[in-house]
Image (cartoon, rainbow, N blue to C red; front, side, top):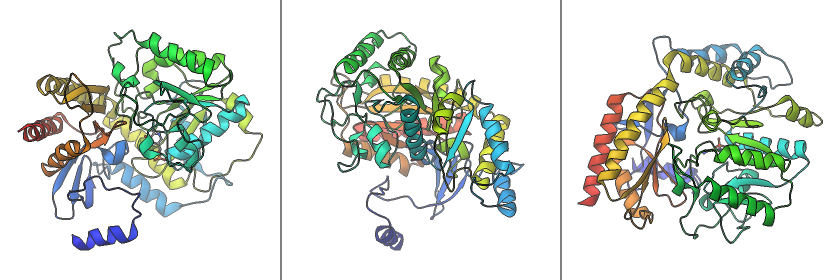
Length: 452
Ligand code: PMP
């Protein structure tokens, strides 16, 4: 174990953080919703490599579906680049396009979510002839220098990358700047998350749309290139928006010449349970959809899907991506889509997610330190607070204590939120109600231990 830690420290840059500091987990093997460490300890994986292992680790069903598809393609053809034509590319893009409504039918394959968002931003600027981009406070859209500009969460920003800095000292809930993304970590917690209203009972939408109008009036020129938003925030902590927020915002953005981009890197592929794509829960059709993570169950892949109109503006130039649309990635992603249908992953996400949200809401009523339980399907956030009245975030040390304790009892979860105050639950979409019960018992025990 010590040797492994030395090897990690020698070879892995310090920017690569392990989640468990007290005792890092050395993962050895995975099977569906389970992971094993090098000592043979089994963990229920409720984070899925950050919402990525969509149908289950190694997916070893009776048919050996995903693993077999990968093996078969590896024996046939590894790589050509898209300067040639090959069938896995066409088979996959046709299948993916069929999951999306018209006119979202033109697909560009990338290798990650950041690449997809980079490309989407470029295409939006080329299409509209405008430059400014709007994103939401608390958002995460990637780690490349450009997407870092879209990302609002200060923890992921570096001051030398392009498009950084706090452009608006007010730090409103909805932020616009030449490069999007607010950066004020010390602003009061008064984010859009305070308006988490899945039932649509909230009236705060007027407030946010009002702020957006103010932003248009004061911070950006009247014409913008794009508005980026996740249908439900991921890294931001399962933040949901007031009813009609996305619909109204899309309208305002389009009136000002911008295109609307749904970042479905986390919410896509049935994760929100009720719909295959998160945007479908908001009664909108974006001009572009970006995706990655769950697309190929952990194999590196991403995509931008857009309209023929936007694609035509982009066609004026040449775009090349060596690995984008790699035959093995396409074969795996294709098998992932089949598996989702056969295994009913979206239904599992809906059923187990709804059960978890109901049970966690009961725990919220029981524990003073649970400030909010939110999300949809298997995109769940449990926001931890010092107390319900102040809603101040539970400090990092306390978060870590509960987090490590949960791990020691055999369950891996995630952390997020602007202040690192939200536990995130986004397991492979093959978990069962028994797994949910196991987690609830462990989490309950961890909270009980902490409160003692
Ligand atoms: N968008 C969202 C919503 C994400 O959650 C992430 C990754 N956490 C990204 C984009 C970037 O994806 P990648 O890490 O594959 O570049």
